[in-house]
Amino acid sequence: MISDRQDKKNQYQSRLGIEVLQGHNLPDLTQLQRHELKKSLWEHGVVVVRQQTITASELEEFSRQTFGVLMFGGNKTLDPDISPDLQSEYVYILGNPKGETEPTEKFAWKWHQDKDGLPRTPGLDMNALYVVMLYGVEVPALDLDGQLHTTQFVDLIEAYNNLDYEQQEELENLSMYHKAPAFSEEAVILQKAHPILSTHKVTGKKGLYLGIDTAVPVGMEDKPEKAKYFCQSLFRAVLERTPVYSHVWQKGDIIFWDNSQVMHRGMPYDATKYKRIALRLGVVDNSFH
Image (cartoon, rainbow, N blue to C red; front, side, top):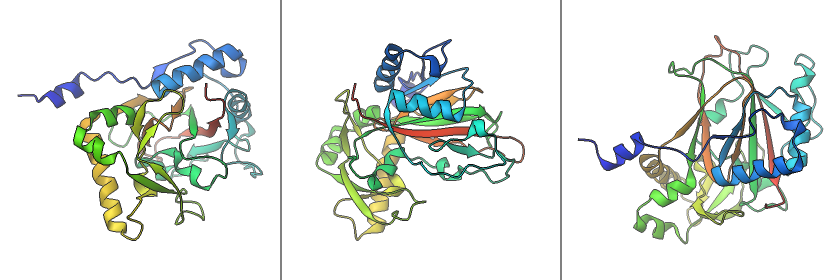
């Protein structure tokens, strides 16, 4: 007999991953179309624009004009062995662009929230609208498990709604400190705290705010094992109740996701068989509309 929860998962239709702007090139969008793109992103959490052919510099300029403050870049040395079309100051290449057998993005194969970068950014609160876009220039055919190559997302607004009332109530007054990313010098420093229940700046919807490896609940600063157990147990409860949305990559896809609403992970692939080139750019929207 199939349980109600299993049946719900089998019939799951995610709000995440809607395709937008069919037939349009990002650099050519009007202001109205840019506004509609953001409106769809706030509503759906994850959106995709397909069949794009743009350079890293064009992606950077589009992001600056559409959203605002670019993250993690500036004064970056470009690699002479990689096409200049794939490089710019704020765009990072994930994958194995030079045929490396050890992909650069292994750190992203665990569930995480890219807002983990905000603790070390002066003037930005942890609930800032941090949007990440990932452009699939070259896409592996299969993941390590033989399935089509995907990036997975979990809806943290739905996850909050799926928790038991007692769990929601327990989390109501709890906060977490968020550390900088593990690759930064400030990674071990607890810098900014944020309520575990986050209210979205645009939609006003409540959702969970989780950090997994880069968060410590307030009050557990000196109890690392207890903190780790708390975070992992909460996330297990999320995955037990909330189905995962998997975006199946096509060459030319650009995925946008709102880190105020989702967590994600990349899926491992065999870099000895496949080349993956994905251009990543993070940006904070400062218009709130």
